[in-house]
Image (cartoon, rainbow, N blue to C red):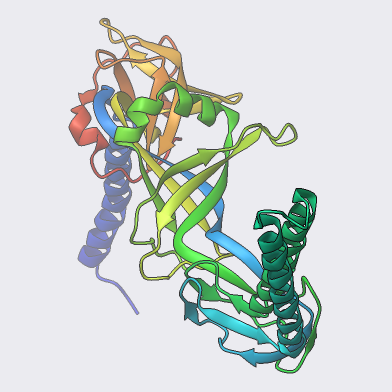
Length: 368
């Protein structure tokens, strides 16, 4: 197929114009790519969050044991049931202890009669017994009464009662089992307040102790459960253990969480979030920094638009921003975008300055 001369010329011109367009687009992209954007650090109040893996324990979690031998005659509770203080949970067959109590009551009555007779004989005008015999009769009566009270207590121990309000756990013995003293029948948990234990590094512990009065006012403690949801109640620091673990460098903390609806149970795990307000903290976007040999730097622009690499010390890392401990201040200008395209000592011909508020808003990128 033949192509007319006019059409051939048009096709040639189009083919020549395409590379030129591509070159222009590439030059524009290159200019945009090398565009330097600067900003300044900002001083603001920030909420710093520290996370710790934790274990959740009941405020009271005890083993409910038998105090007497015998057959388990009655079980009055079910697994998972809530019980009140002094509520009877188990009964041990009491026949033997009832007989023993009856015998001791009889002995106590006999001792009482003997004591009364001896005392009357001593109270005569011409006593026929001595004071010593009255004292011996009194001692025998006291001994008999003590045995009677002991038998009554042993009989009472055949009823196992709840020592506090709580939730019954798994039953370890079934109806009719032969029970011996100290056999564990079940466990009982007081879940009204939960004790949440977590380990804190020594550096964080020293920060907490240095600012503990201020921390109490500004600190908020939350609990994240295993499914990622937050527990609706907030907690407070309840205790700090006495010594550090020399192997890990940690010290155990305890946070107390009210548990009014019984959601938390003994043995659960989660994550403790400790929020505290750091006032007038110096913050910069993460993407304004770069790392060299485990140290972090920024480029600072001086009055002559000359770049100087400056090391910074990071106090806390948050989403897309760093809280800076030292290295830069609010009066400095730092390179926000294009840190990889410039060099230490280089003089900038031009750059765009972005206000700190705008630079910190809608952060999407981490450090280069």
